[in-house]
Image 1: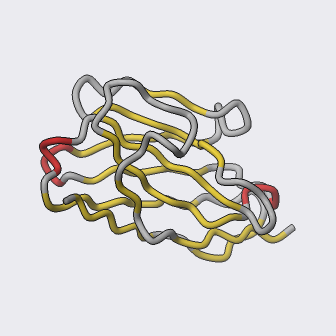
Image 2: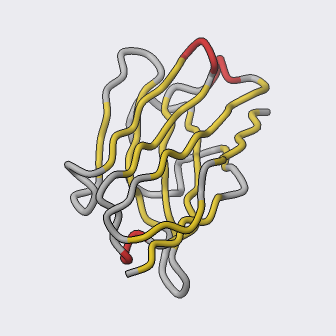
Length: 124
């Protein structure tokens, strides 16, 4: 089993920045890909960004390219999401996910493990 714990969410104003963290524990050696998803009220969970532990290849949703940066610290088994120039439409619960596949999937289904989520609220 793999446990994922997110932190760093909060209430900010439009244009501000936040950094989310996702600490992985347990059998992390079996995971290859980590990702951030988000879910706003009444909407489906959507892909934000993904990264591979090895090599650091990344993928981003078009809506966050140029504003968000995903990174990882292998020694700490932690993945980060640096969010700059936040917009009210970025308001959502942000979830960390882990997958055993080499492919950075942009849909939730393939991901085996999920964190509990952290709320990000951006006021206008």
